[in-house]
Amino acid sequence: MYRIGELAKACDINNDTLRFYEKNALLSPSSRSESGYRLYTEKDKEILQFILRAKGVGFTLAEIRELLSIEVNKADNACADVKVLVDTKLSDVERKLAELTRFQTSLKRLSDACCGGEESAEHCTILEALESNTNNVRHEHSHS
Amino acid sequence: MYRIGELAKACDINNDTLRFYEKNALLSPSSRSESGYRLYTEKDKEILQFILRAKGVGFTLAEIRELLSIEVNKADNACADVKVLVDTKLSDVERKLAELTRFQTSLKRLSDACCGGEESAEHCTILEALESNTNNVRHEHSHS
DNA sequence: CTTGACCTAGGATCTAAGTCTAAGGTTTAT
DNA sequence: ATAAACCTTAGACTTAGATCCTAGGTCAAG
Ligand SMILES: [Zn+2]
Ligand SMILES: [Zn+2]
Ligand SMILES: [Zn+2]
Ligand SMILES: [Zn+2]
Image 1 (cartoon, rainbow over the protein chains, first blue to last red):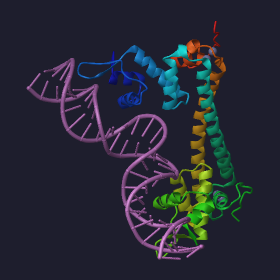
Image 2 (cartoon, each protein chain N blue to C red):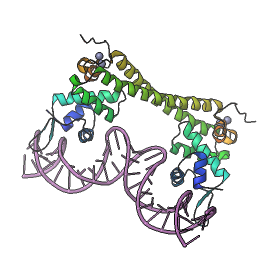
Image 3 (cartoon, helix red, strand yellow):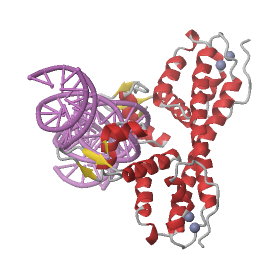
Image 4 (cartoon, helix red, strand yellow):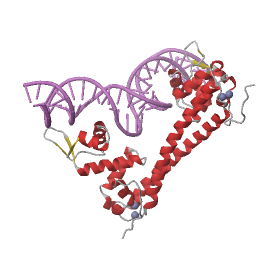
């Protein structure tokens, strides 16, 4: 049996995070001591590690709640159910990747076009690009 | 002169967003009507478009505030100052990209290992991977 | 028997970027 | 003249995932 602080330390998270997971129906301690202290079993620890691993691949707590509800009742769920959750998340992640990649491309283009020197920013291509309604940075400027 | 609703509509944002930008020192209308209505000039509109373009390449409002403070006082700033903001943001974006790419890789590995069929999830490799302390999914399972 | 470490509950706070509500004043068109 | 559409303010609410605060109860060591 772990008390909250012991489990938190063992899994390198905050005590409050465990209380938060409990309040949010992710993980409740199997029992309480006479004085009301939370007592977690080895099994509870495994569930927590499941949660942390799921977080580690990008699932939100709401999604993890779904995964857990399958996990505790495997027999009544199909592989398909699990895979849908993973594939949905994967699409999600890929949408975010696409946006960030657009940001990256634009920022690189901006950065590459700017001399980065100590000259006045009055003709900085970065500022000019943000001022103008073109979404491309086409030319290097020259601080003539 | 645009009233708030006109400018918001022209730039396809919410009236409240303009009020929010004002409260957060990003864009204040150049004047007010006698009755207190916000009145935005063409110049104000350009600043708004600057903000929206900067958002479009991933800058946060706090970062945009910095960009704007350079923009309004270009002569006293160097290209270097602008480029630092862009390059810092680029690093930022690349760090997030790296994390999302890790998520993507893990999720793909999980997805590929799961049959996705209508069989019981009792031997689902996805759940097994999340239960175990290995971070790889090594084998296809067989619903024997 | 007291100090310090640990625990409890409940609610407040944080970040980011808005969105929404309430209660009222203004403008425009019919 | 009156309804519709617009505007004002201040402040509350939203999402996500915690983290912190208050005021107090418990427990082991010295
Ligand atoms: Zn330059
Ligand atoms: Zn430049
Ligand atoms: Zn299967
Ligand atoms: Zn499976």
